[in-house]
Length: 438
Ligand code: 5AD
Ligand code: SF4
Image (tube, rainbow, N blue to C red; front, side):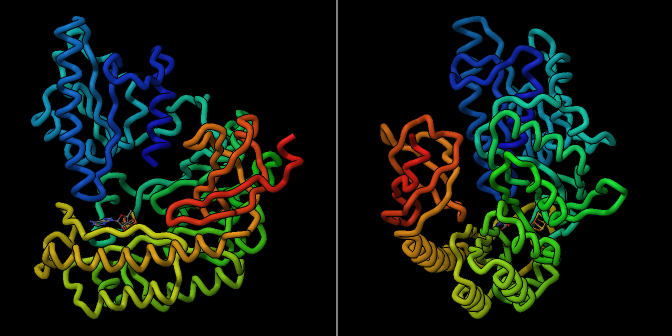
């Protein structure tokens, strides 16, 4: 979602004459869009700001040029005042729900930049209504935020505090943005939300729509080839959404459905509000709807109170499901969340050991999944050049990165590839459908 937000900030600054630059030393404005989900991500912001201070000083001393430094995103939201205290060279601090005001804030900066502006409200207006409708250049595969914020309040998580309450964009706005992306060449859309499957909106005729219905509607757009959505919560996997996996060919057979832990006791303490069995039942229903669906998840190890037995249950669950990929993290204490004050914090070395064995298991599953893809053929959307000259890259329906030789003219088009060799994190392939190449 930060990628999406960064693009929208960029769109909103274009009318002021700004353009994206890859040249940090000569940039007039530097916006860092931050993540607050774990402590490490947050800490990075301050070390990055130290680096930017030097860039700003150099521009001032050597070229008498004022560089504007903006901190956006969830660290800005959570630590707004603290940022300007610890890093007074930051000019503007703007939160995830106020970045539509960025052009106004830039205009309000005094030319010698003696003022500091902090805007981290949760405003009554909806930022999407104030962002430019015209989107800048996006790739063949693009993101579209349809839902934001979270009302679930998992006890470890800062999102409900930094992104605010759940909000769903309207069907009309989403369809308009999808059409605009498609008209500029996008063929794959990933629908985004912190709780994307909690999305609901009023469709034509006043009927209430859920994400499943929305996916059916998007699939009707002729030039859209593929649809994905992330991130989902198990509690919001309703029948219509599961049915979309059975009936909508454009919906990719890959689902990121975080469970966090395989222990019912820990799930309860995390306030996830479902059991391991309920999660497994959802996966069964998904697999009955679409037999080739591949699963991905997030896991947290070392949540307060997690015993060896709880952890063993997580490994059991992973064995049972068989994941195509997954993200895993050590529990990170987040100030202000209920879990932060729990007494049974797990020692750091125990967390590290558990993370290592969990990741070994997940890596082995990922590699086995990739291996199973050898000799298979996939229709793929060619997204960009690969690392080597003459090489292209695409994502398979299962989100694996595939590399193959082919002409650059294929970028942005669909083609068929055959997987020749699998590695842990990527696949080598060759173009199978030669007709498409000519
Ligand atoms: N510590 C560790 N991991 C966390 N996540 C969210 N909050 C924390 C935390 N305090 C992980 C969860 C979530 C993902 C986006 O980040 O696994 O699904
Ligand atoms: Fe955080 Fe996701 Fe839980 Fe919401 S559902 S509180 S975003 S982990």
